Image (cartoon, rainbow over all chains, first blue to last red; front, top):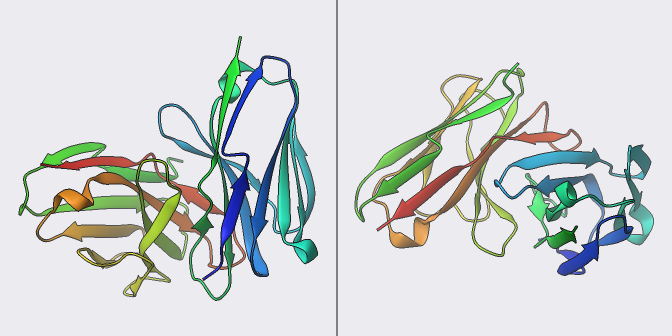
Length: 109
Length: 113
């Protein structure tokens, strides 16, 4: 099946810093989503972005499908941005989302 | 508009007991999914459904059964719970399958002792 690799696995930043999270995938995709899992375990939809660029406030994402990667940018980090960020894709003949192992982000005050 | 709602939120089972997890969505979505999340891992697909009356196996289906008798509901059953099934279970739905956004419930934390 399709492989999804996220980097870095862990990231610790000070409040106000910017960050870039990367998602590489091994096959062409029909669907790519970014999620934030907050400390209470809820999965929050950030972006549905199989290709192109989107922005939502301090967050933006870019997917370059032909090169099989996606980037999530977080600017001016806040402590509420802490949690795990997951990239998930549908591709390689799969019928549901395949998740990466996530990037664990800690924003310190 | 509640989105995707899972019942219960927490449960402790003894080995060998059975239980059913309920997922309900009010978005009139065709596709529904059950995932499990283990520590330090992303989510893995257990079973899914492409419409009322249909079910199909995902990546880790063993030990689970599912039913989709009504479009808005997707049930996940454990016939004889094992400690290896201790996990957080998430239900999701999407309007269609491959090219539409999926939305997740709040999760069910299940412990099998």
